[in-house]
Length: 153
Image (tube, rainbow, N blue to C red; front, side, top):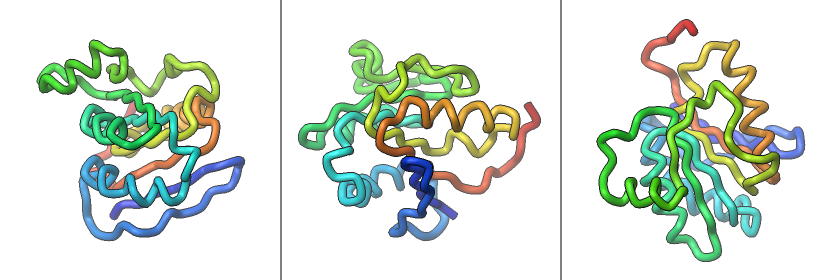
């Protein structure tokens, strides 16, 4: 099951429009028009956090008047040329999201997270969620599913 949750100014609400079993990256790409409708002008400076961030960032950069950056919580050794170009330009990077993010507070109007929180222990989840909210000025959207296996960290 896939959920999109919006957290904005302390208010949490579900964004409806996606149903079924999914891998989140493909669904984030399909959800961009829905997010554009929901956020409008607030969707100008976006941080995507999750696997395949280069694909999401590349798609977002095609949107008019949109700047996008990506944070890959896993390795990108096997990255394609497009991803390597984004890394060279500083638009994508690898970082462990269990630690403070390398951005100033409210650096992004919107932070989109997919497939990155499902496997965190409660200890790290309680550290990571406030950190993601810290770098977002207008909203935090989280796409999540049920993890195949849980890890103890």
